[in-house]
Length: 122
Image (cartoon, rainbow, N blue to C red):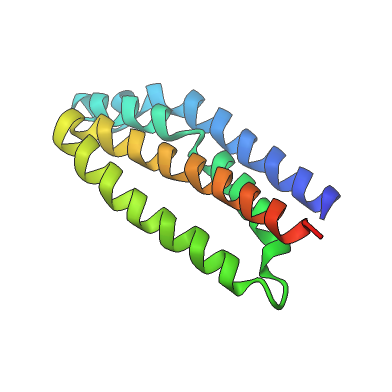
């Protein structure tokens, strides 16, 4: 898991760099109407890296006997995601949706770390 996880993180970071690099080219390739999309794409470029990190932390908790922890983590994450998305989109529009996505992933990482700590406690 250490080697494959490191490779996956490097691939996700590489994809993020590629998206940041390609985003400014969108208006040139697809037309001036895609300027806003280019800005959004560069803002979303690092989301896959956070998602891969979450999945790597998630993996040990997928072993038998841990489904109750995962249920609580993802149930709590779903409730928080709906609340954050509702509030942030109403307040900030599309940028709020992006903030909600990053915030949801970061909260899930934190909750998974707590669940992992609870699982490892004697």
